[in-house]
Image 1 (cartoon, rainbow, N blue to C red):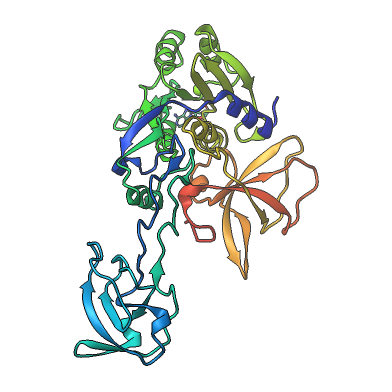
Image 2 (image 1 turned 120 degrees about the horizontal axis):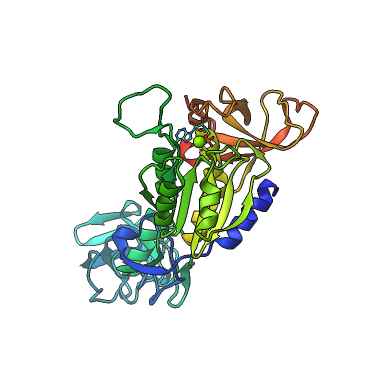
Length: 406
Ligand code: AMP
Ligand code: MG
């Protein structure tokens, strides 16, 4: 049985980045760059003013100089004049610096009288000028392949006039809930039946990971039906099933996948919850057979499926760094395997501590909704006292650490 780290490494070795597609700049938000981005020109393209003020020649102007104002240079057009000794040009932020001038004296450091200006400061060569190429040089790579595009990346891409952006294709992820007991939303409640929560939850998790969910109709614990649905799912880049993956006589998912030619890489990981989980590869499709229990399904998705989707989606860092956080209370580890503990991160004085987010039994999904993170509690026999530092995997959708998630 692989450890958690071994299972994740194996999955990441099987997941390969998908192909490239080109999207409009507006549509690149949330996408991953497929190529390094190199600027064709300098940024700024020309020396320009960082302030509203007067463009002057510093060496000709001791403090108190009175200069003739010649010309007005707003942003948006080339400077059509030169500044000579004894003169200044009124200039606005962003306007190109006229020839002859080497600094800008801000309005607030100057006094205007009719068509002359008196400098209240000693101008310094280069002051308040944005130098050509000081932000970015022609030929320089400014964003590397694998970068996630957000508003700030769009700002840089737009400033060098990119309109079409090569990005990695989003993984298409088929989602299949299995089980005779499952009801679809809107169906009437019936004895012994429960509503499918894994389907909607995993579809949301897939979307949040930047992939495209394709939710298949619920499959019953019946080999023929399961086969038909799984066959459909294998056409996607990844297939995520839930339930039917333990050792019960109705647990048919692995067997049917094997019949369909999927190569199982492992079954069972050394974690709790989430131990009965299988990973297989069928052609180009990575198949994750997650446990049915909603907490186990979501935790294994977060820790083992999401990194694979990020790798397929071209992210530079497919796995999320964990944080080292002290426990806020004593915790009894399991003797035999790593426990995934649902925790809230609470601010105590100047540091965070990990506190239980509530009932830890696998059946309670509500306490997962209250958690800021998943603490990885190593196996052992001794109680871990409060203050023991453990790895915590942040649940990003919870936003900031330290808040009350409830
Ligand atoms: P199984 O792995 O099939 O034994 O299922 C384990 C537990 O998870 C059982 O209590 C199931 O009823 C429950 N379960 C399975 N699938 C789902 C689902 N899609 N939504 C909510 N609970 C489920
Ligand atoms: Mg079942």
